[in-house]
Each structure stands twice: as structure tokens, then as C-alpha cells.
Image 1 (cartoon, one colour):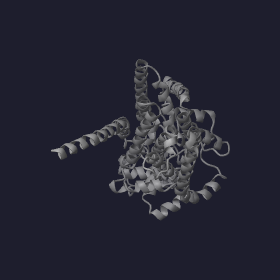
Image 2 (cartoon, helix red, strand yellow):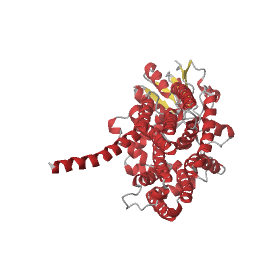
Image 3 (tube, helix red, strand yellow):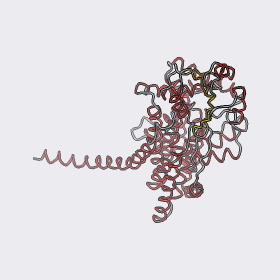
Length: 512
């Protein structure tokens, strides 16, 4: 009897704390998990509706390469092979638009959930919920959550690293404990080190994050008190581990990047209008496209103004917690500042390079809103969700990628054996042939040519010619008028077809 009683007492004493810790962990996971689920649902909506465009086609081609060829391609084209190796695992499940973009949808959803988790550490449940919802509803985050490129993965990794850094900032003394001790902050250190290292090996746009994290660490050191030098030792060890994991990739691309910096990139100069449109898309909930970085025609000016006002107010609210303000603030401002400074020498300022800095911006905005009384907080939050949802609806309706698929489907449905398709560049031919194959266009039915002389010879032989023109990337492209004028040797077109905003075709009937 006594043995049974002692056994029951021990179970009660030990099980309650364990159950309490488990319940606390489940409660802590509930909000980020709910936000991630919402974000994933939004990103899965219409995931495969839009066609692959040039960059996504290169993703498909690179993911199908053997590792040796992919590595060689990485050196020549200045990209990391990591993302494409990961995508190659999905090719066995299919190469549809939906399947190729699924990893990005998942990564983007996790990034939204992690933003909520970081926000909760910074300012509690309100801040976390608002920041996560803004990340989930952001048209730009959804846009790249439906893009078969590495930007969603990069954002996910940086938000994981930011979570680790913010956890270290909350308790600098505990963060200074050696990692071999049981009570050390193993999770935050691991999240920061691996998140940062993998991000650096994913995309070059992660490099400013390393600078932002080190600037945040200066504030942590200042607040560490007697544990200051112990934290510095821990931090230096962490940086050494990150550099060691980054160094092989860095050595591979360093020389090509240095040589490329001497030439001309396709990136446009960072004019005021271009910077304003980039900020509007990334931070202020404007619909945009992925090719030309144009903003959608419909906007809600009050939404952007509210976000800016709340972000400023959030920075003011966090002044009482200077370590967290520095950590989150540097995570936001360092990336755009670095790109702008670098653009003085060589244009590198692109909206998509700013993508991971949206998370700390939304955390600042959430911190500003969360400080109000509940009634005002609830009203404004409902307005933000409503306006954000309306803007996201506009993003779904906006033509964010050129509709080469519409051209291919139409030509596939009406093409006659012997028809010729004129595509005046390698990139247009690559995009058209890829989407045409998916549209069921029989390659034996048509012939593709790239010069007007070939098209003129086909007309002389009595064949029909489809001259197809459209935007495939951000590089220079002739205007519609200039393209039509260049086709003067072919005579007058019989018909003109438009496929969305930027793709059109002129049909020339062969001469009998």
C-alpha cells in the first residue's frame, strides 16, 4: 500500500509540471501554426493557374541537370545550386506548375508563421498575431509564395534566423552560457546559425542579413552586463560556424561576381519612382508583377499610410526595449540601405531582393497597433484585414506573369500543318516552346524560326506565319510599334491577336 501511494505521489509531482510545459508549448505553437495554415491556404489558391515564365523555366531546366552540370552552371550564372537540388527531388512527382511552386508555397507559409512567433517574443500575442497576419495577407509574399524560385525559401530561412536572434536578445545572460551546458539556449543558437548559413548558401541577397544580425548583436552585448564577454565568445564561435558553412559557396562564386561587377547588369538604375514602387509592393500591400515590377492599377492608399504610421509608432513603443528595437530595426533597414548604397556603384536594387525584410517591418507595424486599447485595436485590425484581403484579391486578378500560355493554346488550336512561328530571340523561343509543349502543340505541325528572312521565305512558299512578341524578362524589349515596323518585309498582317497585357501575335497568310 505504501509503495503504491509513493508511486502515485511521484506521478502527480512529476506529471503536472510535464503536462504544464506541454500545454504551454502547444499554446505557444497554436497562433503561429494557425497563421501558417491560413498563409498556406492563400498560397495554394490558384497556385498552378499562371504559366511558367523565363525564370521559372530556368528553375525547371536546372533542377533536371546532373549535379556536376548544375555546379558548373552555378559558377557561370552566379547562382547557388542548393535550391535547384532541392527542387529536383520534386520532379519525380511531376513537373506541373502546381508541383514546381508547391515548395515555395510551403516555405512562404512557414515564414508567415515564424513572423508571428517572432512578433510574440517582441510584444506578446497581439503583436505576433498582427505581424503574422500581415505576412500571410501580403500580396508580395503571396506572389513569391507562388513562384518557383528561391525567394520564399530565403524569407523562410531568415525569419527562422531572426527568431533565434530575438530569443537571444531577450535574455543575453542566458544566451552567454556555453552550449555544452544543459540550460543553454540551444534552440535559438541553432536556429540563428543554421538559418543564416543556409540562407547565405541559397541566395546572395541574404548577405545583408549577416550584417544586420551583427549590428543587432552589438546591442545585445551592450545589455549583457557581466555576461558580456561570455556572449561575445559565443557570438564569435557562431560567426565562425556560419562562415565555415558559407565559405565553399563563397569561394566558388567570388571570382565570377567580381568580374561581373565590372560589367553591366540588366538591373535598372535605382530612380526615385522605381524605389517608391518597390517599397509599395514589398511593404505597403500594392499588387505587382514579377517580370517588369509594375504596380497593379488598383490600390488602397490608406492601407500603406496606416502601415507606415504604425511602423513608426512601433519603433517608438519599442524604445523602452532598446535591444529588441535594435534587433528588429536593423533586420528591416539594413537590407534596403545596403542595396541603395551598392546601387551607387552598380544597380542591384530590386523589389524581390527586399522580400525577407518585410517580416521585421510588419513586426514593427504590429508593435505600433498593439499598443492601443482593445476596442480601437480590434477596429483597426479588422480594417487592415479587410483592406489587405481586398488588395490580395486584386493581386490574384492581376496579370502578374506574361500570358504566353494563352498564345500557345490559341495557336495550338488553329495551327495548320506547315505553319511557321516567328520568335525573334532565344528567350522567347524557350518560353514559347515550353508552354506550347504543355498546351499540346505538336512540334511536327509547326516550324519555329528566329529571323524575318526565314519567315519571308515561308510566306513565299505559301505557308502561314505567326509572328509572336511579348515580354519574357526585365531586359530591353522592342515596343509594339517598333516590332510591327520591323515586320514590314512580310507585308500586311491578316489578323492581330492579343493575349493579356504584353503578348500578341500577328498572322501573315502565305502567298499562293
